Amino acid sequence: RRDRDEILIHSADQKVLSGTMFSRRLTVNVEHFAGKTAFLFGGEWFEAGGWVEKRVDRIDDQHISLDFESKSSFAGVSGYVYYHTADHAQTLVLAFSCPIMTPPCFTARAASTLPDCQVLWERVPDLARPGTGLRRAEGCAWETLELKDEHVVMRCVIQPLSDQSPGGGPGEEFGNRLAKARWCRSTLSDTQIGIASPPNERTAASSSSAAEAVATRPSLVERRVVLEVDNRSDETFVLDGEWMESGQWSGRPPFGLTKKSATKVELASEDFFRGVFGLVWFVSESSLDMYFSVAFCNPLSESASFNAWVGPPPAELLQEMHCAPSVTSYQGVQVPAGRGVAWNVIEKGSTLHVRIVILEDPAPMDITAYPPQALLDELKKMEIQQEGGGAASAAAAAPSAAAAG
Image 1: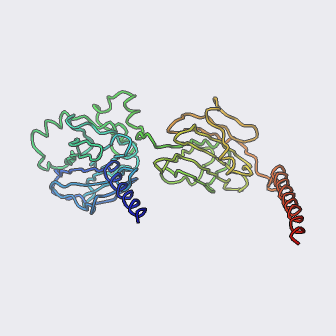
Image 2: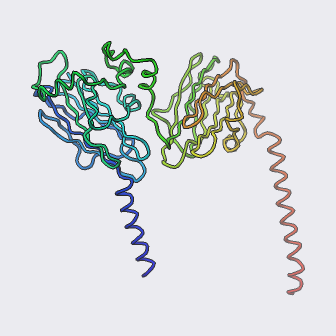
Image 3: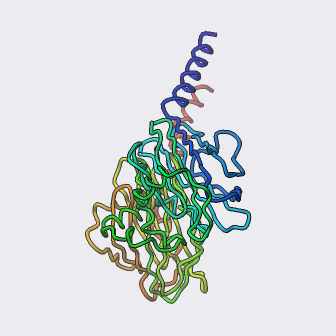
C-alpha cells in the first residue's frame, strides 16, 4: 500500500509540474472593424497544442478571444488558423509559436488573398514587448498586452482593405498609433507567400533585415537536415524508401529528383530531446537499377554525420548510417572515388545543410555483386565459430554425462 501511495504522490507531482512549469497558453483578442461581414473559420494546423476548449468558428463585428494552449509538457503551442468572409473578399491568418525554450512569436495577415500559411508560420518573428507599440501587416495590426512564460495575450485589430468602405474603426487614438506603427519584418518576404509587395517604406530596410525576416524560427532544441540535391544525370530518381530512427519530413516528402534540375528537401526533429537520424533512398525511374542513398544524423549533443552514394547502393545501408563520418572531418567539396556523387557541407549546428551533386552517368548496380564476397566470408566465419562453440560445449558435457551414469 505504501508503494502505491508513493506512486500516486509521484504522479500528482508530475501533473503539477507539467501543468505549471511547462504549460504555454496564447490568447488573441480579435477586434473586427473591417465591416459587418463575419469571418468564418477556414482551416487550422498545429505543430503542437491546440484550442483551449471549443474552436471559434465565427468572428462577427465585435470583440472575441481565441485561446490556444499546449497539450504536452515539452512542446508548447504552435501553428496557425485562418478565417475568410463569406464572399472570400478578405481573409485572416494568425500564425504563432509559443515554445518551451525560446521566445514566443506571432504575426497576422488580413489580405484579399490567402497567403501560403505554412511559409508564413515558418517565418513568424519574435513578439515585441508590451508597451513598445503596434506592429502591422496587410489589413491588420496587433500589439502585445501581456508577455509571461506561461501566458501570452495579444490584441489583433482587423481593418478594412484599401478598396473597402471603413468599418468604423477603434477610434482616433488608435488611428494615430497606427500611423506610427512599424511594419512586421516578416512582410519583407510577403511576395513569396502570395501577398502583394509591401510599400516602399517597408522595403527600405537593409539587406540584413531582409535576411532576418525570411529566416525560419530559432529553436534551442530543434534540429534540421537540409539537403540541396543537384541532379546532373539523365535519370530522374523517385523516392523509394526511408528509415527514421528520429525526425520526420518538414512538409510533404519529395516525389523525386528530376533530371538536370535541383531539388531541396528538409527534415526536422519531432521530439523535444532527440535530433534527426535516418536514411533516405531514391531509385532511377526508368531502369530501377541506380540508387541515390543518403545517411544523416544531426543529434542534440554530438557533431552531425553524413554520407551519400549514387549508383550501386551499400550492401548494409543501415549499418552505414551508424558509422557515417562526422561532418567535422570534411574540408571543402567531397568527391568519394567510385560513388558517383559529390557534396559540400554548407552549415553545421542546429541545421545540417549539405549541397549534393549527382554526377553525370552514374553506374548501374550489378545484382550478382550482392551480397558482397567480404560479407559472405564474414558470415561463414561466424558460422564456423558458432559450430566450434557448439562442439566444444557438447564435448564438455560428455564427461559429465558419463560421470552421472
